[in-house]
Length: 231
Image (cartoon, rainbow, N blue to C red; front, side):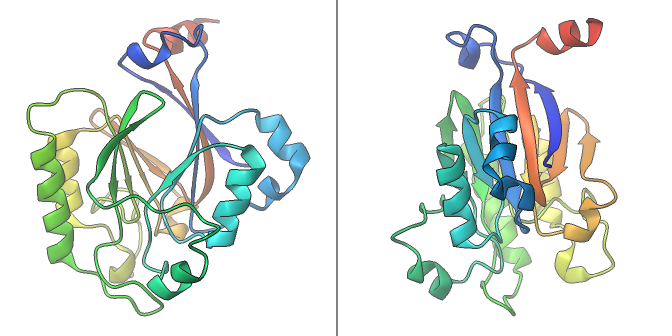
């Protein structure tokens, strides 16, 4: 079954009409979580407000999960999400978000960082493009202090990227961005091996989550987490 995470969201505004109910996200990437194929398991998990994808899931799997939960989806593309493959399924799979775009879903501000480089089996990684992404997003967040979720395919360098393989290491520019933007959550994929060791890392005020497979994330209104712990 998917891993689970509870986060206290610092802004009460998105919860005003929810009678204290959490905002529920299903984060997915890289490897299809087989337990989600069974309708009984999906029923146990309950309703999902938003599906968020961090790349490298087959477009048919994305479509299946969207239909299975009957929930909206936002996602970034990964290094294996080739243009040719996505052209073939563009009529059945929702469109990916554009890199460095900032948007709002369910009252939650989000930003996306797609794979910075060519996509495909031998897709290159471009540190220069990653720096361009980081600078653009940092500029768009200037003067804004509201809480944010960042979706990326690749993690920040040294966070959730335990690997001796340079291709699957994080980007230095993303770590720079992490330190300046300080999102509440940073969700990523690309590093399946690291997910077996540390799938969740805390850096300052930010929780970094290696989504590989699936993670259920409950966003709670301010003060609710402390109350839940007390019970």
